[in-house]
Length: 308
Image (cartoon, rainbow, N blue to C red; front, side, top):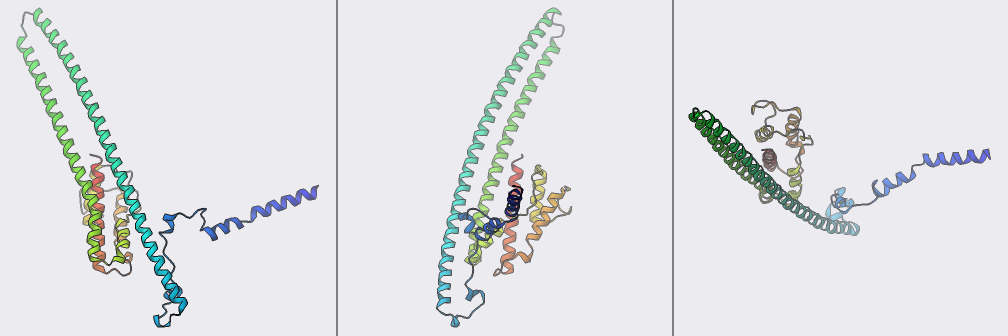
């Protein structure tokens, strides 16, 4: 019995030490249980051996010709799949934008109703206060035979003027709120147009094979997180520095937090010529990084509008 128990323990230790299943999963399935379509179309097709070694065309055999033809057909299919996937993402983004607009409208409607209720309640309170005050003043005036009539009139005039001032302030706030909303909507519209303008302008100047790669670079952003920065002044100053390419205190009046300075430094790193893809000349690269900085500036200005 003791020998059997030791034999069972030995087998269990061997099973625990054997990672054959894990290694086989990595080899066969790249470490995942299921290949997703959107992940597969992001991968590049392996080049045929004749293209990879740079074999000359006149030395191609039938196998090389067949492999090149299959590679071209697979590349065309992959390109169509990527276009379909991008269309799906664009449709999803449009649906999200519509949903966000509807939620904003519902929120604004609720805020407007609550504000109106607040005004009505405050107005009722003020009216009740005025009624009590007038009754008190009337009783006081009755008791002292109108000795302080002039003082009471002055107080009533001051209160009326205060109510007029409150009404003016309220109107001013409503006008400013409408102006801020219009400015924010304009910034958001401009930000959405920058994507379309990039595709139109860059497609006219660059080769078609570089447009998709250039758009990915155009959407690339520094990995530095700015979630703790929620002030309008910081966002606006960041927008100015992005376009001016200033990281230190030579531009703007704010002393930026470290994460903001890291973000600007990472933007400079992304603009380096070493990140330029093969086949793109320096003038197109400069145009690309300039348009990307304009897009980042627009994103910061939109973010600043969210905290007005």
